[in-house]
Amino acid sequence: MVDEPSRASQTTQMVPLVEVQVCGDLDASSAPGVNDVLSEALALHPRQLVIDLARCDVIDAAGILLLLDAHRRAIRDGGMVALRSPSARARRNLKLAKVDRVLQVISPDGDLTLGISPDSDFAVGEVTR
Image 1 (cartoon, helix red, strand yellow):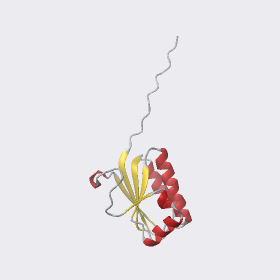
Image 2: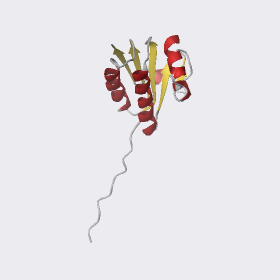
Image 3: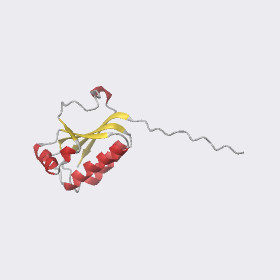
Image 4: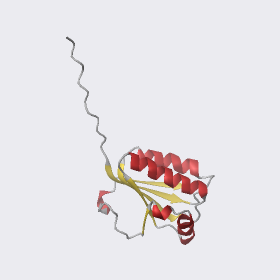
């Protein structure tokens, strides 16, 4: 009788928080580069991915789709996405697309849902157009 090799259970270790700052417009021309950075951030398996939009004035349909896709990928891996400090114009577009009903939008000083302290930041990235 041959024993089957035992399968080690594969567990993915999650980091508490990853932050990405988007600088410039989040539109069809910048979406591929931002997607690459978000993919790298999501590869770290964060419990919370915060996308800082304070320096992003415009978000078009391509940008909204990118944010929703990042949210879908994060949820699939047991994490979540929050948007920090979108401009008034970007916030209006997010609200019109009803993205604010799917993604958490937080203020610059807002409390994070998971209660992660700012001292526990794992990685910070910046995307410029």
